[in-house]
Structure formats: structure tokens, C-alpha cells
Length: 487
Ligand code: NAP
Ligand code: MG
Image (cartoon, rainbow, N blue to C red; front, top):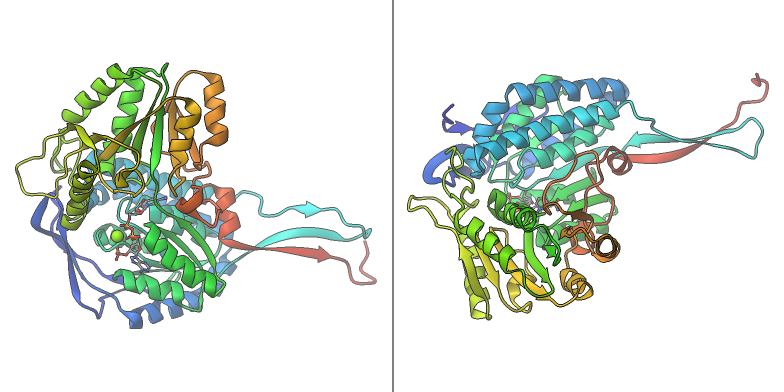
């Protein structure tokens, strides 16, 4: 199914609205001359309209009740599956990831809608005993109001699904500023929400630049903000939202380590770290960025990693044989290449590199480096297919090295030594610790989130309990009967 150039629009109060800002085009990162999506950017005026529409639509959406809202989300899940191929093709054309990965993301996003739709049936509160004989104490959940949603381009459907679905389920209305690199995917999701029966004004999409996101999070009527993206933008948002006392949830970058112990299964460890470091062209927050070899040796493991990386097939994501697509933009490519050059200048050595196709496209060679842990690349998140091999004499040293960044998203450890596993679980500073598994990937029904600079301020997304806690206000009701109404 060829993806033709299509135009996308913002969606406000149940209607597609052309932006009144400058025109923007999304080029195919595998064929940089090809325009995939064009749109006009929304500006402050449209943001105001979207916020007004979301405010007006709130009371009726709340009144509809959680089960009815859940049914609409289930209808959206079915439409995502029905349109799956179109979404996947658009995703690959805009983002560059291999079609198989786009299809998996579509499926996972539909599952996310289904999961939250079903969690509508979960208990919503707790009953507590009272010291007063006929009093009942109950907790109840109420919507927050308008939720501002800001999402990155790397999972252009899944991350919006994690945020928008529970926000809507719990009776909130949404103003979503999606990533500028993936406007077509955002538009397709928005159309599906509307077709599934989300009433006008309940979910609104703004296609616009980062500065519009800044205005969204500053808006006094936006009661809560959920953001996934980079640390600098996250800190900017944190400062604005905390200052005005609104609720905030953020998932930021990572610098995830994989610890390879002397007894590790070499094939499993090598396959896992190569997939986790290079998959999606290294553009996952959970990608393995550092491999820490514990103890001496590991020649066999290193040889296997080098062979696997050197043999990776790069090319357009639409080509079936391709394992690694292009990187998101020419400037992102330049940043990754500059980071590799800097590592070499700081004493690093290139251990393996894959071939880059000769065709046009934002290609970066998947690269394995080794060198001193003082290299900048061991601290800064380089959002591309680059991994650095470090060494530690003992497990304690390896854990200290793994923890020696400001990030704390995921980590993985390869061993069958139960004591070592416990030590890692207890002391690795990471929100997710994967044992004998890649640092990437997570189940949508398990809590997901990082520590340190990877997450702020702590409540985790994805899992229904965490989502209910973030996307609602909890009140405690003390219920006594009026005199004369005792049973
Ligand atoms: P980004 O540059 O921070 O952008 C994320 C979103 O914020 C985009 O919609 C962007 O809009 C918007 N934005 C940019 N400047 C803004 C501002 N001043 N105020 C408000 N919003 C603003 O991140 P990215 O490059 O899209 O994504 C890569 C980053 O996301 C990486 O650091 C990665 O680790 C992180 N990430 C984290 C997780 C996690 O769960 N922890 C998951 C995925 C990605 P534009 O697109 O218009 O610039
Ligand atoms: Mg960015």
C-alpha cells in the first residue's frame, strides 16, 4: 500500500481545522526528497480554541460515566486494528522504522486501548471503617479537568495511547500537542477517536512546534500535564507546571546499562544487547547505551556482538530485508556522528560498525565503541544506534558504574547467579531491571517509569492503578445519615 503525500490538520471541537501558522512538511527519512505529510502549524489562537472546547465538553463527558467511556475506547481499539496497515505504512514513511516494528506498535497501541477500556470495570475507591456507628467513609475519584498531552516522535502511536486513553477513561478532556515529525500518525489516531464516538471537544489535537507545547503547559485552564520526551524540554516543562501548581507526570531520557557477568549465556546476552542497542535505530528511551563487562575475558561475547552489529542490514523501513531504518532527521544524524567522533577524540575505539547504504537517507552506522568511562558519550544520552563497552572488575564496581549517570530508566543483567541478581535488583538505580532480557520492551499492564532524571515526579504511567492515581483527584467522603433517616 503506497503512502501518498497527504495533508494533516489540527482537530478542534470535533472538526479538522487548518492551522493559521507557517506550513510544515514531513520528509521521508529514507528518501529525504519525498514529502510524506504537509500541514499548517497551529498557533496560540487555535490553542485557545482547543482549551475552550475541552473546557466546554468536560461536564457531559464526566456525566457519561466510566463504563460508557470505556466502550468508546474499545471501539477505538477495533478501529486501530482495522486501519492497522494504513497506520503502520504512514508510521514507517514518517518515522523510518521497519514495517514489522510499526505493525507491532499498532497492535500494542490497540491493546493499550483495550486494556484501559476493560479497566473501566476496576473498583474505583475503598471503604474505611468509621468511629461513628452509622458513618461510612469512602474514597471517590473525580476527573482532573483538561489534561495537556505532549508526546515524542519515537513511538508516535503507543506513547499517545498510554497517555490519552487513561486520561479520557477517567473523565478528563485532552488537548494533545503531538510530535512535529509524525503529524500523519497523530491525525490518523485523532480521526479514529472521533469516529469511535469521542464527542466533540473531548479530545483535541494541535499540530504545532515545541513553543506551542510550552504555551499549552503554561495555560491556567490545563489542570494536568503528561509529557514524554527529552530531559531539557522536560525540565523546562517541570519549571512552568510546578510553578503554577498543576499536576505533572514526565517520562524522560535514559542511559541504560547491560551488565554481562562471567557466567552469562553468550548468545542470549549478545542478541539481547544488539537488539536493545540498535533496534529502532537506537531511538528508544530504553535502548542499551552501555555494556558493562564484569570480570576478565568476555572475548567470545564481544566477538559475537561485533559480528552481529557488522552484519546488520540498513535501509528503508518499507524494505522487508531491512533490520535498521534511518534516523529521524539530518540534524539527528549529524548529532550522532559528532558524538561518535567526540568519543574517539576522548580515547574511544570503534570495535564494530555496520555498513551504511549508499542511497539517500538519514543513515547512521550502528556502532560499538570501547573506551574510558570518562567519555562524554557515557554520560549524555545519544539518541541513536551507538553502544559503549566498559569494564568493571567486580559486580559492586559494575553497579556503581551503571549508576554513575543522572538517568535511571532501565537496566539489564545477564547471569544465572541468584545472589548477583538480587544485588542488581536491590542496587541498580533503574525503574525497570530486566534479568536475562533486553533493556527495551515492557508490558503495558505493569508499572513503567524511571528513577532520578528519567522520570518526574514519580507516579508511573501505563499500569491502570498508576494511571487512575495520576488522571484523577481522590476525595474522601464521610457519609452520615440525616437525623430521622436511620434505617
Ligand atoms: P523532545 O525534543 O523533548 O520533544 C518531545 C515533545 O515535546 C515534542 O512534541 C516536542 O515538539 C515538544 N517540545 C519541544 N520543545 C518544547 C517546549 N519548549 N515546551 C513544550 N514542548 C516542547 O523529545 P523528542 O526528540 O521528540 O524525543 C526523544 C526524547 O524522548 C529522548 O530523550 C528519549 O529518551 C525521550 N523518550 C523517553 C521515553 C520514556 O518513557 N522515558 C519514551 C520515549 C522517548 P516538537 O516535536 O514540535 O519539537
Ligand atoms: Mg526533539
